[in-house]
Length: 61
Image (cartoon, rainbow, N blue to C red; front, side, top):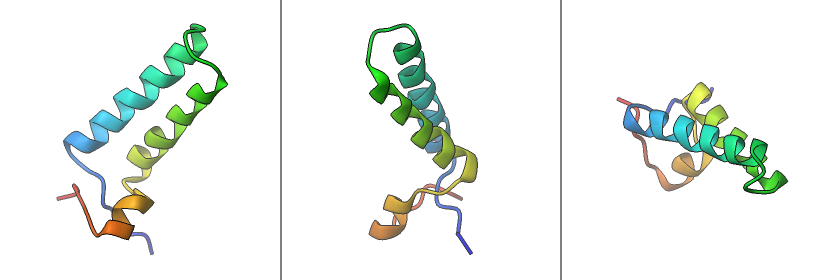
């Protein structure tokens, strides 16, 4: 079972970064790599970041 490790300000920051990257790509400012913005949005949606688990960090309360 995956234990939540993303929460609070971190979750909202991930959503903002993801939306900005996808928006910049849609507007033509950055290339197709802007789809990488999906990753922080998904990690916020699932409250889970694999990197956080590797380093033993959590922002989830």
